[in-house]
Length: 160
Image (cartoon, rainbow, N blue to C red; front, side, top):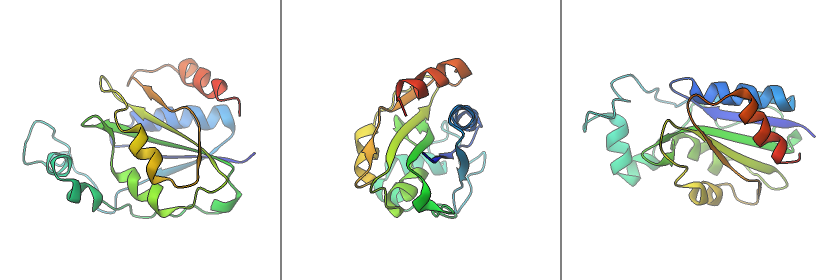
């Protein structure tokens, strides 16, 4: 079974979880990058005029966020895909939406994970609706300071 871990990160927390999953499963890591990168000012949640605040408050702006590339080399060879993102405004960061809607998940097992210091994985059902035809596994929210053993326990619980 060939496994991919695709993730979007800004602070590095999601990358650390993605790396742990990849190590535990022998997966290929694939970082998703926004076509228009986010700056520190863009990510300032305290500024109501920051880019992420504007996107969070405007569904059309959120949907217009694109990735630099949604393709994955040898996509058809993957059986299992983990998709990861930080939580922004109670939702998985919207840049992953472009990846989920641009790829055919038919016949693939898909597990979503998010990282957050305090917020829940509030839009898991929305995320599931974007990846048509995937066989969804149980998703997980991890705190920013999660241990590798906790991540590995979740991966083991999926019985891949």
